[in-house]
Image 1 (cartoon, rainbow, N blue to C red):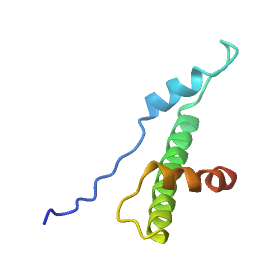
Image 2: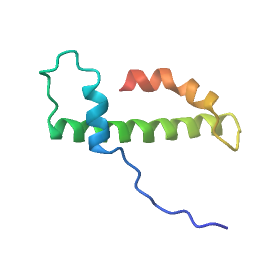
Image 3: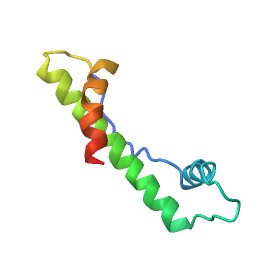
Image 4: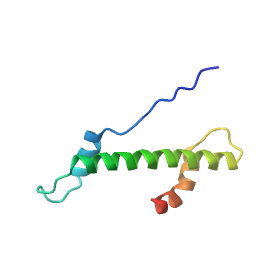
Length: 82
């Protein structure tokens, strides 16, 4: 049986910053480093919560694996919560 490793997966601040900046309408708009860090943390929380809710949905349907359908079922409420 394979050992489960606790690996911290996160979004890179630079990647998040570039992604956010790509949606700015004016060239003068800037993004601070703290704002990029905060958004990266929010994305981490969102993804973890989506995974957890999808897992619970699969368990409630007596499934032994999580499929995209489970994620699609929890997504509306997840978006409302965020």
